[in-house]
Amino acid sequence: MKDNNDMPGHLARRFQQIAVAVFLAEVGEAGFDLTPVQYAALATIKANPGLDQVTLAGLIAYDRTTITGVVDRLVQKGLAERRASPRDRRARELEITDEGRRTLRKITPAVESAQAIMLRGLSAREGEELMRLLRKAIAAGNDLSRAPLRDIKA
Amino acid sequence: MKDNNDMPGHLARRFQQIAVAVFLAEVGEAGFDLTPVQYAALATIKANPGLDQVTLAGLIAYDRTTITGVVDRLVQKGLAERRASPRDRRARELEITDEGRRTLRKITPAVESAQAIMLRGLSAREGEELMRLLRKAIAAGNDLSRAPLRDIKA
DNA sequence: CGATATTGATCAGTATACTGACTATCAGTA
DNA sequence: TACTGATAGTCAGTATACTGATCAATATCG
Image (tube, rainbow over all chains, first blue to last red; front, side, top):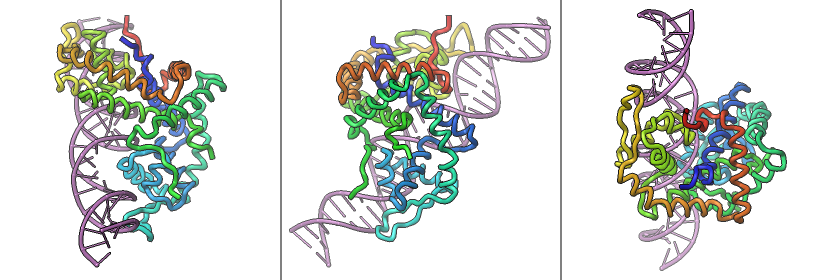
């Protein structure tokens, strides 16, 4: 039988598990309580003020049913605001708060240090190559998950 | 600000997400209802008859609190058995059932096809290189998660 | 031997992810 | 305009993962 170590699926799970643990450890040591998912959502809200939840989900490849809870927690922590859209009464517009901006700014060193720690077993060249291969595999499989990455609609 | 695509953590999450979706789709089409996690656990039980839950968790790098539920579901589906250990009354010995063996045998083609689909954007050489780099990064970060990979105790 | 530490398993609580269903709303068309 | 289809958001239910706690049993050491 094939070993676990020959299964890309198993390696994917394991690497992700380590990535999350490292992120939480670094960010926690810096005094913040933010998950990788919450961080990415908050950074994306800041970069795209007023976007709705479906667009946010598409930009970071989250499921639309997951994004509800993530935004709930960002709002509850005072980092983001959710308000009804004036143009589409189904949609909610998302906005980062000043507190959210402050948090993002102060948390950045911890986030970048976490990304480095995840790759600490690899040389700089290998780290680049790993990211290139992941990007390529992900691009080819983007539509295979329920939550594909999507551009902002024109 | 750094793009998501430059963050190994984000790429890890995305690749894993696709890997799980592909696994469930392939296995589902083959007529089985087994998650990647359940599959790995069942295959490991088969390869190590009579092992206890902590050892199982270590062999596939699962958290010990997660393994309880996974084994619950394997038992509930009739694929594995959990019984008290005669040597250590705290421990549960795990055994695969005939039904579990049959399922493993019949599911293998779907599992292997899933592993191929995950890498379909890459050449064979690139796929090998991706796995090598993941293994290397994982080895260096093994102890950073709460559920590190562990050998069977001597 | 007895006190202490460790270990195997489980539980409660929280946070992703997903399936599938549902409501409200909007868009396009006959 | 009425009908149809699509879309935004949410909810209930299930399955990983983790934190931290607890209980029972074993191991270790003075």
